[in-house]
Length: 446
Image (cartoon, rainbow, N blue to C red; front, side, top):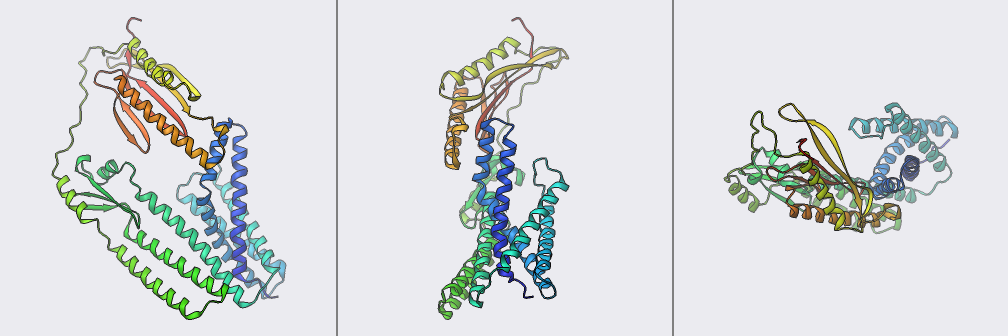
């Protein structure tokens, strides 16, 4: 019996994989959120929706791999056996490839949310078996002339290449994003923050860390070259798919593909030899001559002496910081209102003391009333603005000092001799979280 065409099997495998994965993801999120608050459940579901372009593109690539294995296996079985054997061979091959892809995902250290390794691999293989078998069944039911088959094959290849370009571009952009660039470049080069210069290039995305004669890119040259090659292949595949679909003239299409291919190869070769901008190199030479930024050293405690901070002072400090937050922003929603707790600790002289902790969670809007990724993004941005204002008010109070912002979160300390040991404002599922911890205070008069 004539086997189904591989191009048709792959095309069905793409959308089946995306559809099955979408059902599994949202069913898992709903089941996970059934035993949690509405805020947590809606927040996690919104994140899954926001990340849907990423996991859908990854599903397309996985579907292409399993679809090719399915099509080839069904083709081999089709020359000797009937329809049932084609379905069985395709489903088996798809399940094996899907299991291998799941194993490769685990090998990268990706978290699978508490699912056992064996369960995850079995689930991956099961998804592959279902999509492979259904793809062969659907491909057996229809056929077309040679030109339409070629158009379908090139169109499917174009979709796969578009998804590969998207994922490659996302990875390159995230790797080269200038978040906390000064500190990360200083660590990478092993120099002081003041001796670092960094510069971004737009395309391909690149972040250069420079100091003196040293220059290190955040993205290897081959990664930029690969991105250009994938983009070039995507454009050429799209042109060829359009040529087969609409019967365009052959010569202009071939000439266009040749010009685009040569341009892409030239661009990829340039990426392999990329260098930082000359003005950044000159600034890096100047920066390398700067003296390291002096670091304040805490005063050493004399043996046998008690710290100056008593428990009443420490408790009063966190109480004032809590009042600063609540009094000036009555419209905030508090999933967890500011609460002060205390814990025992040991002083330097071996006696016991008390440490006070302030914790709270805030948001400008109840996430149970937020619908869709756009509204969630607006709430997240509003919460970030509120966090910045809280930091400003805390600094103005004089009870905290030395603010650092890392990846959109704030870390604060205290002025010399202050009661605060550390303060932090960050975000969990778009909800703001704040915490303050005092130094270990001795139990003085209350």
